[in-house]
Each structure stands twice: as structure tokens, then as C-alpha cells.
Image 1: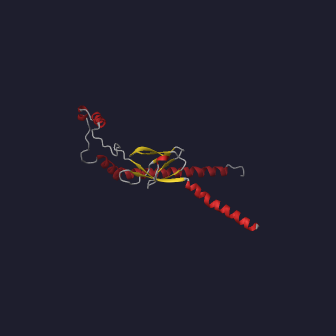
Image 2: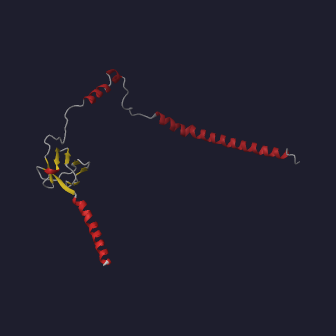
Image 3: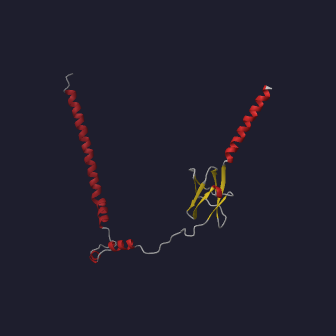
Length: 192
């Protein structure tokens, strides 16, 4: 008897566990927002319920709202703003009317006066035009390159050899002085 009582309690708990989420799901309401003219679902409609819920519709126009609301506000830039009371909802579909005055693209024709004024301010004066340097240097012999080439072929090699000899002589003199200091330190040491 006690075993059957435990089974009944376990069964009751199991039913409660199974039925409780379905009760919570039953309190949710799924609806779809569609275009009133074309009957096509509308995406990105901003949904605001009076219970603090803020949502946007998915790509298929669907949204879920708790059953505790009393009013839903629907807003989209291309459609008329609409609010729906819970008592007005007879089905799961909400229709929005397209906004006739909504601008989808704006094209502006005219001239850019700022650019025109800047071009006038940057235009050179006639005096500056007279004193202007030429845009290009006329073709002719490159005197500087010729002078460098002549220096390399004539004086350059001799000057380089002379500076190399000077450096070598300085190094030899430095080593001679170093050796002389060692020699002097050997003969002047107190060991002798």
C-alpha cells in the first residue's frame, strides 16, 4: 500500500513537472506583423508593450509577447505608427499601413558654392602669373653630373688614395707610441 502511495506521489510530481512549462508557454502569445497592402511580413518593427517589453520582429515578422499586456505599440519608419489593445486582437496577425509620405531616397540638385569660392580664392593673380617659374626645366646637359664624373675620373681616385695613406700612417704612429710606452715601462720598472 505504501508503495502504491509513493508511486502516486511520484506520478503527480511528474505531471506537475511536465505540465508547468506548458502552462508558462500558454501564457505567451506569438503574432506576426504584415504589410496591409501586400500581405508580406515586415522585419525590424519595433514592438513596445505596456508591461515594459521592447522587441523587434524577426525576418519573418514574428514576435512573441507575454499574455499580460494590455496595449502594444508598433513602429517602423516605412509604415504608419500603430497601437493595438489586447481586446482588439482577434487573430495572430497585425496589419500595418505603408506610410505614403515616407522618403526612401533624396536626390539634391544644385551647385557647390563653397568649392566655387575656394577655386576663385586659390586662382593666382595676373602679377603672380607673370613671375611664375616654368613648370619644367628645359632639356640640356647636366652640368652637375658632368662635374661629379670628372672629379671621380681625375682627382677623386688620387684624393681617396691620399686619405687612405693618411689613415694608415696614423695607425702606424699610434702603434709605435704604444710600443714605445711598453718599452719605457720595462726599463723603468724597479725590478732591475
